[in-house]
Length: 80
Image (cartoon, rainbow, N blue to C red):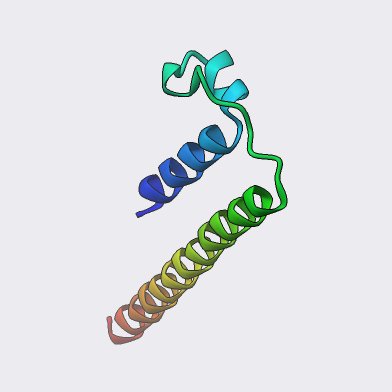
């Protein structure tokens, strides 16, 4: 889950910064320039907001899982 999130961010970063992507050797963006129009910036903002939401969802999932494990661990210790 975290790997996919990092990959999505990395791809967004490169697609929104094609000159940077090309400098890294990613040739998919060689013929593109960044979209600096208002519409382009708004699109980029929505893209990053979506990634931030996914980060929060992942964090909530991880925290809930850790709480569950901690609770289970304490229960197991108290019964032994």
